[in-house]
Length: 156
Length: 226
Figure 1 (cartoon, each protein chain N blue to C red):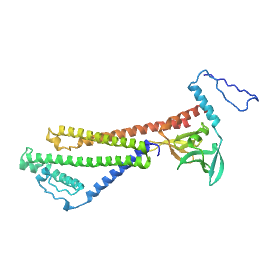
Figure 2: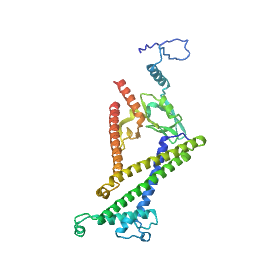
Figure 3: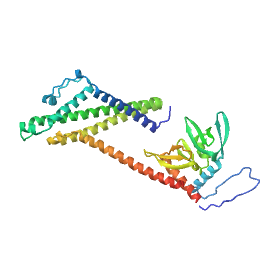
Figure 4: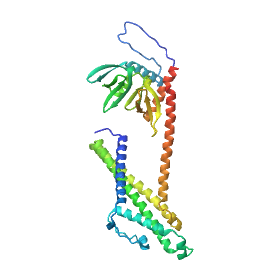
């Protein structure tokens, strides 16, 4: 489908609205809808707590988001902060081209990935620039591959 | 009640199976070092091998007596020059009987070990399922009933399959060993070891293939990351 982008500027619009006018609903339209939804949901800041103090965390500063003992935490260069949001919600609001979910309990910032490696027992491990290592779920390797490919193509 | 998780169930069952097998092995090893002459009375002659005249006080003593029997017979079974001067060039009937008894003892020993370990696995499987359903999943009411039925079914199925395999292998052994003396004389449980070896080879090959595949995926991920 060849999409034309129209931007209507008028004071009669009380709130910004995006509408897709298509002859039929297909996979391409659904993908675009999902991407737009992700783009709208994306947040640049998160609220985290550390030692009973509340902090505003820039998403670009986040290295990893992980769950441990039923709580979610995010790691930045300034330390570890406890988050209120659930991991599946964080996956949606974090910039999609910057963060990847590598397992059920971990989301990592692509910029902080040093390399991928294989462990002795044949598991894929992601090594971060700060020295941290996380296991990559077998079921998520395909999604990670697609995202990295997409990211690579966009950069090129 | 917690949500059913196959991963947790498998982990629980594997842990209990490992625990029961570990305990069994520990008991067997402990018994190997245990010397209690009062428990066993043996007759170190030909009749001993054939009639298997042993008084057994515990299951572990049986194992030890079988091992002793094999050790004694191994020396007697060698048809060396000394024996040839006594019996002649032809293989004598006495040695044929001893070799048969030897093969039977060897088979008994292997069967005994397999029996112990299959019981350990069965015990581990049962305990694993019980622990998972009651303590981990905390199933109640209809779910508890359904899962209990399913568990009993799985255990029965495991027993049926293991027995089928056991009888299949035993029948092959009898068929092969009934014709010639040499095959009887040889290690009668070799087919069992061959089956085990086959499974180990398959496991090793699967592991290597998986490792190579994961290496390939890792390489692709790294090339896309750059």
